[in-house]
Image (cartoon, rainbow, N blue to C red):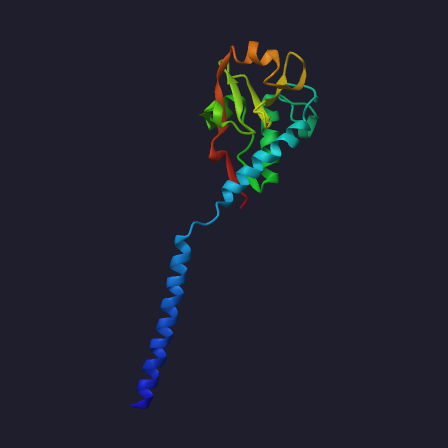
Length: 184
């Protein structure tokens, strides 16, 4: 009888310990986990200015891939900046897309919610990337200029921004989350 009582006590103690562990795990699982993907996206955006600066002044060439030829067009410029920033943030960027295929993989954003890496797109689907927004909210843009035959940068105080970009303005756009994914 003592033996059965001892076994019963051991079983109840073990069951209590397991129950207590399950309760603790349940409470922990109810607490929000840090959004690691959100942190990676923030790091992605923070690395864009320094990466974009590397491309300013390189020659323009339709179909030029900066990693292979040292030249670029807009599609490869944006791909290169996004891919390098994603890599630096521990993310993967979906892959090269010509502008006509990149634009459908973006979503429109309000001008009061702009971030590094967002695009200003014109009605003819020509685009420039906002690669940096300073503390005064001045925007800095980069794009491949066929007319000037190089990658150029300008800012929102530049008269060309007002007379050309805003006059032909379609909207501000941001990459969809599906274009970035955590490294596997």
